Length: 298
Image 1 (cartoon, helix red, strand yellow):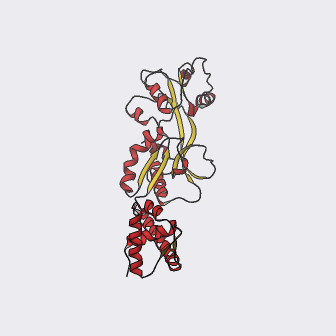
Image 2: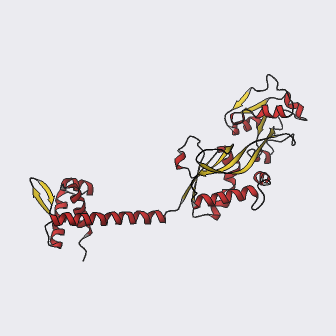
Image 3: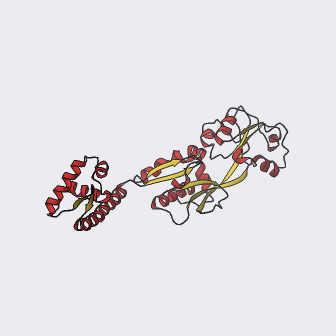
């Protein structure tokens, strides 16, 4: 036979606190209700569980033994309940990605991942200053050699001069020497690398515009303020809508690469699912990684 659960809970809390008033506060009931519940339990088991000693409540020997066993039982119930709740929740996957890549490439493709993996609750984080410890994986731009992470290269980025139809006219690579240039902080050495590659000399007044975000540099190019040196991947929507053009298709330089990154020491099932999906998007669902750039631009 089992005694009333409410009486057992009152006794277990009162046994820990040795104070009916404190137990009452924890249980959100009155001290007299605690006393009543313990008397009910004592009547059920036919044993005295508490004795009063100088205004303090003390456990009897039998009460002490009973309290220890009850405390263990309640701990197991709590642990089992937490495990059950955790297993029934939809697994969450937190992915860190740069705002420009999320906006221009990743988000338009996410419907496919969601449809294939409806059991995963996906959360995109674009704040680079956020809590990295809460991130499960990341699409990171850079050199690929970072400590404490495993990385898998997705594709090497290529940056090209981009202009709007009302912007500077670029008939040949030499026209870049006199065109107003738009600089982006993330590609601060881009123009120098391109000018060095094609043996061009940058004019003194060419670098008047500089932005800390790719999206702003692209919008400045759309407004006709100059030539942006950016990734066609990040400008794919603007290119598709005709707001930007690539006037010199053969001109460009390889920049750093995009990598799929997660903490070292193994990845969760959700991270592996997202990684496989990202790779399928890059390779065109089975193509080679080298041919993946074209799939990315699609």
